[in-house]
Length: 139
Image (cartoon, rainbow, N blue to C red; front, side, top):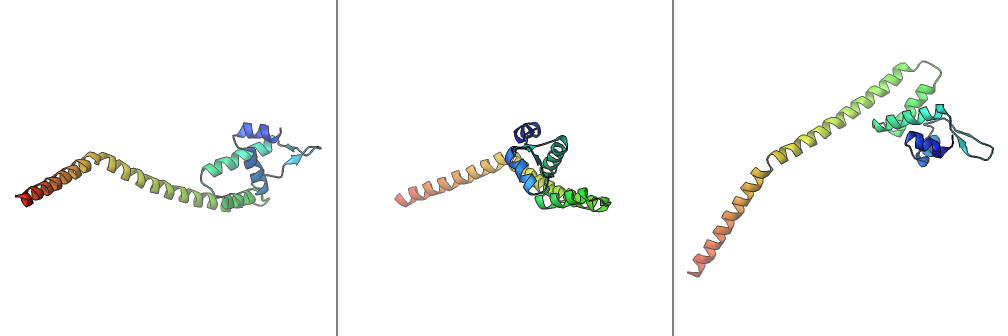
């Protein structure tokens, strides 16, 4: 299939597929006699893999390292697992940060009217004091 068809099949833009190839995240794509990329199922699987790992927050650099390990003919299981664990820890930290932000927003929403009401009452009291002072100064 050509790059447009691969893009439609994977949901990854043609430009991104070319970028993945340039960055060695997918194998070099064979070309037809006229120079069009000919993408097979092996490349489609790799594009989907890269897409999933990027969605999981893995950086291009770490993804390239992981793929190099994966493509190595030697047993690199321990190194692959270590890299995945690092990524998991980074994602859990991001999740915790997001959860803290969400919790803060929930608190703000839960107490919104309390804060608004007390602020309005303070403003009204200040306005009354100001008006009383103006009235007193005129007398």
